[in-house]
Picture 1 (tube, rainbow, N blue to C red):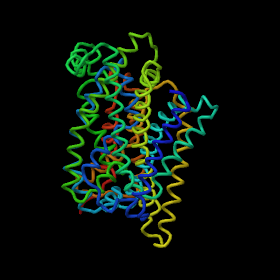
Picture 2 (cartoon, helix red, strand yellow):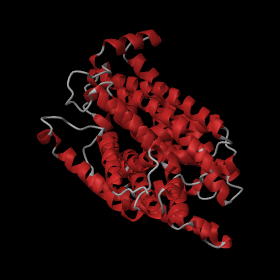
Picture 3 (cartoon, helix red, strand yellow):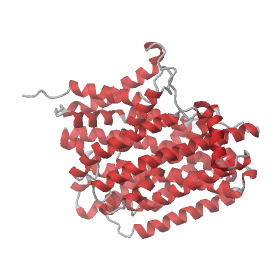
Picture 4 (cartoon, rainbow, N blue to C red):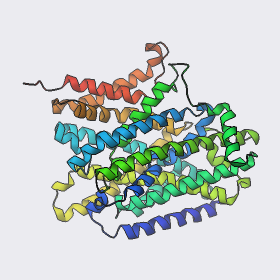
Length: 482
């Protein structure tokens, strides 16, 4: 596809999203923006969450990592499933019982204002980093495929990327996103299936049975790693890391929980979460199969692209065909924006509810404050993504994303675990110190783990370690019971 064709495709795609925004954003109220008036159908939420959960990072990085990490990522995905069950039957009942808009209000009720603000800030940093990673990846692809051809600098690409999100979320917020995420998830899944069909024909594989046999016989399809406990992909480490990544990056994340809290009641929210968790396993298998076929195709045709460059490079080859290339771009954009749009909305929600306490402001200016906050958060995202361009060069982004999550979400994991599994109170004014010290100690342990732990290499489980250190730190500042 030519850069001009790609521009027209992007313009048409966003025209559809803005049209959806027009119809869903007619009620420009804070209640619709933050909670969709608690009227969202659970099945739409569940389907849309697939796209929001996977994002452009998964779309590009999971297939690109198959050559070096095989199907080891599936071990993490199995952990996800049990993490979602914990969210459905432990966290959601708490959130619905308290009728929360921001889930971090729980920390205020449980421990006090400092804990509440600490949890909110931890989320804002975590989601800002995560959303920026995802958008950074997509902006780089769009820069390579389109904007470089017109001499447009990367900074301008980032501004355009964020502006497009703002355009279709600034009125309807989460109410609009429930519907746009559904459409974007559909585009993403169709894109993956069409690409798999093309690659299977190119590799002379006829039908699902031949694709299955091809995948089964290839060494890259190895799923389980039990041989070396020091390996970052060792099963136990990957499984429990996946479980806790889900509990923190979904269950303790305002972005993902805000969608669940739009359901009519707890039962529908649980139905959404369980059905979503099952479907997500099969969707991730699709991405891994795609990665294996992409790698095989690259080897056959002498294509040297690897990691995050593999899928975009092959998808845009002339011999792939305009239709496949078009659906790749639609899938990529859909995957990225289905995650990023809800991130922008949830960051706005958390900042309004938790940081500036919007409900305490005069009612006649609350909507104006919300809109200004939405613009401010958009600006911060632009700045952070541009900074990432200077920092990250040759990386597989999904692994960097999870590494960052291990440090930023750890304090949230420790705080919520202490609140749910103990009945003790804290010396609230010291909580922020623990939330800084625990990630710092986790970072040092990760950096020197090979030397300190006889060759043991810490992987995704850094999140568990960080949460545990936070929990232990909170024990030190608990109030004595009289």
